[in-house]
Length: 167
Image (tube, rainbow, N blue to C red; front, side):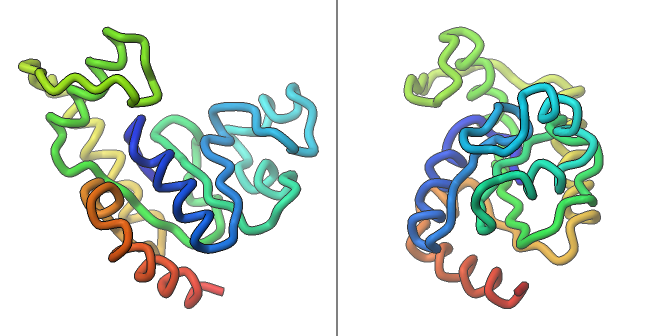
């Protein structure tokens, strides 16, 4: 579970390689390859019935990216939950500002200069999203953006151990 546009994609792919699972990315935001549903059936169910979507995937062990607004009831998901938070709200804000300016939502074009400050609505939404995740997803493992981008080799085995205990 995340609220970032970059970094978590690489994390999803790296974790999948390490755990012999499939990174299906943002399956509630983008129509996934190999899903056994028509596009209209996917559109109809993606926000309201996330398990229906997950059960239509050709693989069982998947790493999924979920962002605020992708699904309406996060509590309907089943699995091993890793909550990834970019603890610097300003860095997250700047990332979004730069993405809007450059129209690069992949994070490949990084702009280190950002003097913009997040507005109160953005800050409130960030806090609400993460508070909701922490209270809804039981149990879950919490990691920071720095953990997955700078300390992946340390945190990945911890995630594997945590998720193995879930099954």
